[in-house]
Image (tube, rainbow, N blue to C red; front, side, top):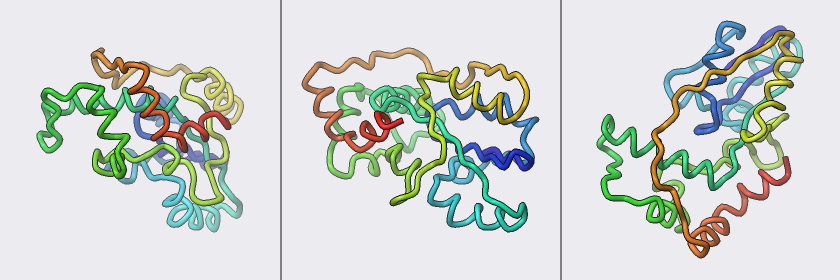
Length: 194
C-alpha cells in the first residue's frame, strides 16, 4: 500500500496484479509505503475503510481516493499458479510438486477453493458490499493506469518489470476453462465493468 498525502491518493496492492513493480517505482514519491507484512501490504478495501481511512481522513481533513489494479481473472489465477510453483522451494507448506495448472484451476473452482488455496478472489479485495475501490484499472491496460498516476502525481513514471515468475504450462482445454470462468463469474463481472 502506498499513501500519497498531498494528492489524497492511496494505492491498494492487489495481489498478483503488478503491485511489487508499482511500489518499487513509486515508493520514493509516497508519503508512506506499507510493504511488510503481506497482510498490511495487501490490505483490501474493507480493511482500508475500517481501519486506516477514518484516521487518514481525520488527519488530512478530507477523504482519500483509492486506486488499484485488477488482472483478467483467469490470467490472475495463472499468475498465482506460477508464483506458488516458484515459492514452493521457499515455503513447503503449500507443496505444488506434480500439480498441473488444470488441477490447480479445478481445485480453485470447487466450493471453498479460493479459501483453501489461500488466494481468495479479486472481487473481495476490491469491493466491500456496496463500496469498491474508487478507481480500478485493468492490469492489461497499464498505460491508462500510468497516465492516471502521472496526472495525479505530476511527474513522468517508469515501471520496472520485477517479481516475474518463470514461464510454465498454464493451458486449459475449453471445458476446463469454461468451468473455471463460471466459478470466477463474480470476478469476471467486476473486470468487465471496469
